[in-house]
Image 1 (spheres, one colour):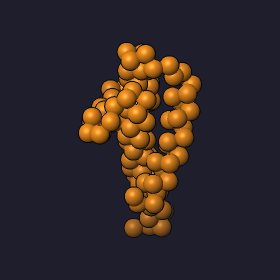
Image 2 (cartoon, rainbow, N blue to C red; image 1 turned 135 degrees about the vertical axis):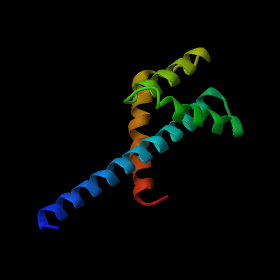
Image 3 (cartoon, rainbow, N blue to C red; image 1 turned 90 degrees about the vertical axis):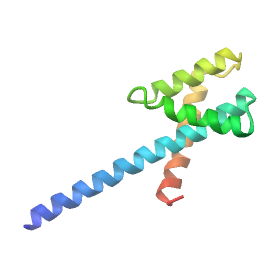
Image 4 (cartoon, rainbow, N blue to C red; image 1 turned 60 degrees about the horizontal axis):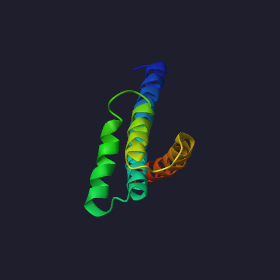
Length: 107
């Protein structure tokens, strides 16, 4: 195997690892977001954990964050929780940083 092939293989492995960590961080962010939203909705205990799992599952509907945002906005609207889309997006940004750090630390 040439040094070029070895370098290429190294880049491919790094890319795969980066994508895996990104996926894990987004899933963790969605779980944390679900727990945050559950608190705002007055959901506690096992029901809050179940709700967080629903938020994680919502992310598999389409690419990007729109599906998660749409679910939480609809749930807040149904319960008359007055939180803006911008506030939810800000919380998502805050939590992705926390989740990425946790994934990188191996938590």
